[in-house]
Image 1 (cartoon, rainbow, N blue to C red):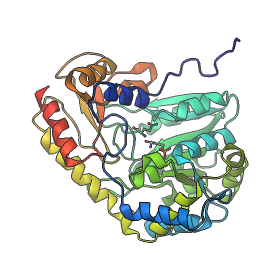
Image 2: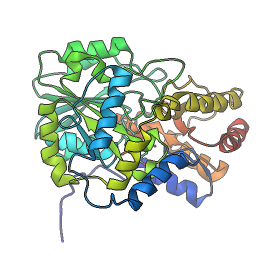
Image 3: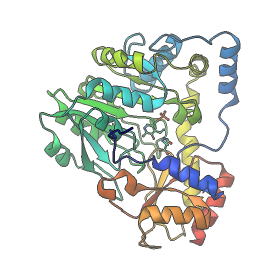
Image 4: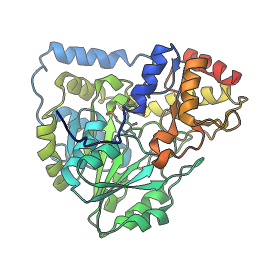
Length: 380
Ligand code: PMP
Ligand code: GLN
């Protein structure tokens, strides 16, 4: 058989590559982003209870209505912003499926989609599969802040969508209110859809306030917001999240979603709906992760890696240019094999593998793991 690849230049995701290498060499795995501690027993018990009490058949296509109502309450509480649970919120198989479905539902051949590099790696393939063109705006180390004049230059009549991500994976930077106002001004009176990837909305540090797209009326009117319960409640393996958008956008989304997954696993939706009744479960997450970030950074402060403290997400970027001038992918692999510590090289998220000599370390780990990782880092 012969076939022409639809994604000739896409390789296996770096997260699979580095986790496999870490496992093979029994390295401490701070590469792929997932916690190595247990999630809340209360949540697991609620899911088990949902299974035992019969939530085992298809959920409604847009998701369990109680869960959608709790999500609507959360938007109300956190951002004083309303989304109608019936028509404006849909439960998805993780943020990944939401993102793929949003792009499939709106982006057509020849359209352009603006993404910020380094970019989380699921955006670009989804754009390419529509026959559309990803248009990059580079964020530069060490601040990874957005140059909005560069964005303005890239917007034209073909621009269908702009994808933002705050707090930002992999850099740990966050968009400010001023950034969001710039985006709002740039997209005003256009047909551009904004996909706002907010999976780390609850993981933001030093008293900063998450600037959700829903806080800005004109942005809200053109935005999909995507979120992930895997990230928020330490269960990345559950692959459950949601997205919300004004009704006309969500109607189009559901036309694709119903044939993409139809609906998402039901007992977890019911368990999460019950768990979300207590807002402390998400309000406590920022302090929980800030303690981990601070511990990790205090342990490695005298190492030869240099850094600016992460502002959000559970990732910390470390610069290694005082240690070696190796290509970051080579250094990340050598660190895994020789020093038994795995991290993610950032060049794979950039155009032309732009290499700023930085690696991303996941600090969603137990204190013990962070201490062991720091011992290795301090010896390098
Ligand atoms: N967006 C970003 C920025 C991410 O880091 C991730 C990884 N969790 C996702 C989307 C996908 O989330 P999920 O695991 O819920 O599919
Ligand atoms: N979001 C996770 C990360 O950034 C990885 C998810 C995945 O493995 N696809 O590390």
